[in-house]
Amino acid sequence: MTNRFVLSGGPGGGKSALLAALAERGYPVVPESARAIIRSRLQSGLAPRPEPAAFAQAIFEQDTQHYQQLQTVDTPCFFDRSVVDALYMLHAAGAMDEAAVAQQSSAYPYNRTVFFLPPWQAIYQTDGERDQTFSEAQRVYANLKRWYLRWGYDVVDVPCCSVPERVAFVLHAIAQAAEQSGAD
Image (cartoon, rainbow, N blue to C red; front, side, top):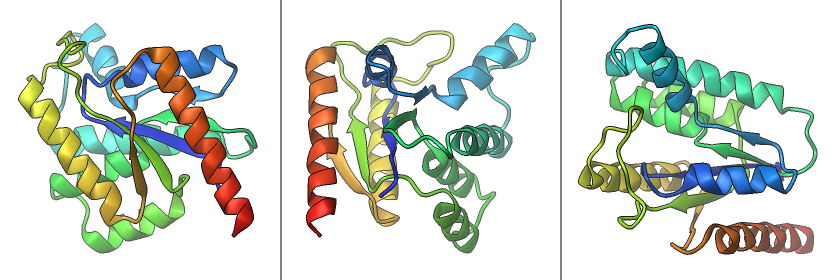
């Protein structure tokens, strides 16, 4: 069982706050690639996003680099989105077919337990890097959830509650998964 855990879902669900809290507890974390790419493009005076296939490819490249950088980590580490999210974008943009997605999915495995944070109306805000409406965020959440299930992941919805409660929820779920894996 791999120790690479994914936080995914729609924009505005609190993934970044949860990731920061896990980092404060000493866990290795990887921030979302899309936000870094958008930030860099804006600083260079470019549009936030290139066309969808190019944007997805840039995210995929960054996500695979992050994955490889944490190959030797043997403690749980957390990714704000993953290669699987990038593969969804590439497939949706028509830049990668089903066979290539399957090949890449098996080359970059994550723990089968994936934590999904739904868009949360109470905390949802747009900013320079997040320009989706709340209803668009809900669509992204639903589509990604179906995508992860399609590729055999076990999706665990993280409840909308305080950050410390979310951290406790995630760490408890990881401990339970490890116990079940050890019992098998």
